[in-house]
Amino acid sequence: MSSPLSDGSAITVRRSELACPAHSLKMMEKAVATEADEVVFDLEDGCAPSQKVAARKTLIEAFTTLDFRGKMRAFRTNGIQTKFFYRDVIEVVEAAGRNIDIVVIPKVQDAADVLFADRLLTQIEQNIGLPAGRIRLEVLIESAKSVLHAEQIATSTPRLAGLIFGVVDYAGNIGARDPVREQFALYHYPKAKTVAAARAAGIDVVDGVTLQFRDFKQCEHDARSAAQMGFDGKWAIHPDQVPVINRIFTPSQEEIARAREIIDLYEHADVNSGVGAMVYKDEMVDAASLPAERKKLAIARKTGLL
Image 1: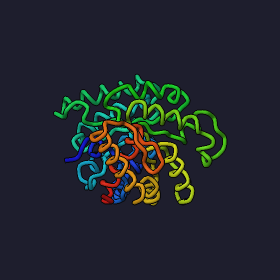
Image 2: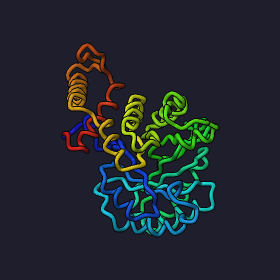
Image 3: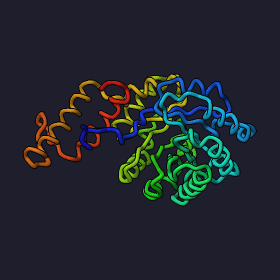
Image 4: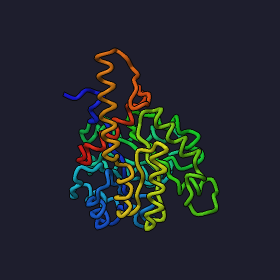
């Protein structure tokens, strides 16, 4: 039987989150056919204002008819301050809540926004017979205000599963003038703040998009930088970005072997010697080393590498 240290069953794998417009059933069918870990059907930026209301019906059809093949099933509402938000949540979740894992909330400014969404979802869950809190939330950190409130947002409710850094809206919010390409040099602080807030709260954190969707070298560069910075994964805006992102966030065979050895070494040292720190190939290893190694093994199991 696996111990809590070696068992990755409680770890969610979010290497790639593929967003696609909710008004097109054909595009949503293509999204679920990819190897993305999570698909996010988008009622916000992916839908023109004239399409937003009608797209809810198409979205409900997608949730109730498509085969998601084990993917996390999510949709992004319109902004919480807009006239569309509450009907987005009520209509879609009441009709298809049993087939929805996550609601993604954009334009969050502070913890109060998350609590509003949380309470609305709780009422709907109670109304349709779901356990309160079963549908999780992910929220986008994409403004100066939300970056400054990231810690409070991250700890606002147990329903919150992760933070996503939205680079495009953030750049617009602060008045950046150039295209978003060298985002890790320009936006190191808000990205790092988002990572720190999520990690302190014990939730996942996902990096934003690479707009140059046909530039796979740029996508790979951004994904590698995000992984080095501590993000769990990255948003994709085109199916062709998914394999690139998954490859970067999937551990190599050498990393998998190292993770298994470190966890086994730690467990045996604890049981046999009663020590909490040991040396692994001239490297000091203690409990702080374990979360990253468990995450690698969880990804390896999901992808069939273990």
